[in-house]
Length: 314
Image (cartoon, rainbow, N blue to C red; front, side, top):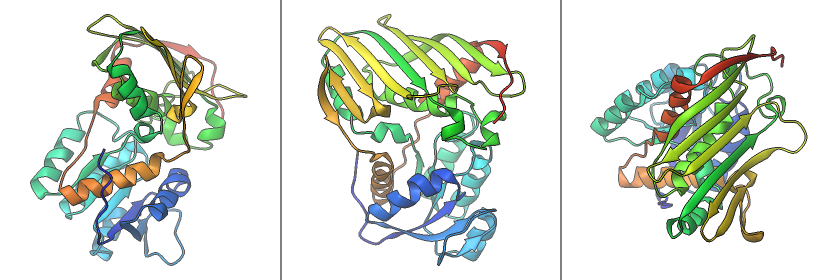
């Protein structure tokens, strides 16, 4: 992935100054040369010393010198925001998932291309330290099976975020799609879904757990278990059985082990990787819009058997 940054700082606006923007985007922007935060558009939050606007429309009118926007809002509203930013001549970074539907992304990519702007659909887990080493390892080996265990406590990681339980919010697929973004990056062949079981709380519109079966053209067994109800130790692990032993990505892709021997034990640098890549895309006049992880989630909703479980209260 290109990590070239522009010499002239990109004047960036943050749209949606919530938890993910404060915890990840702002520290990454501060750590990556080539960006400066020039504006914020947020209904409920502001940054000291940075021009603030309640909506993206007001920001685009009131801060015309902004070069790019990072959309950190819930996915249900991103399409309209991205379209407005592209129409105003801005480069656009989309938090994951890039939208509420698969179909809305192709018109955005076409608009970016027509306007000579960059559109970057980010998958932050692909920038975890172990992902590219795992990809290189697996390119040279026969893969026998894959097991994904992605289980976390929604009350810890998404406190009070009601949008995640609404249509388009994805529920447990909001973190689960991170695993799928890694899976589709590291495996040498395309994967497709064969079966899914989805557990919906009686009072919610999105699943709290999902069991998924995938395969590829070679018939590889690929099993994924996602769950929002995990307490105690959290699990973000992918185990790949190969003809050369067991490869394990853990800690969301930060650590890589081969038959118990640690190959990579990285730090959290996912979002700095995102912004380095975004800077490189802008410098080259390119876009990066991969919809495959979101397509696999859409397939899960198409094929999934739905069962109702106990109500969830935050």
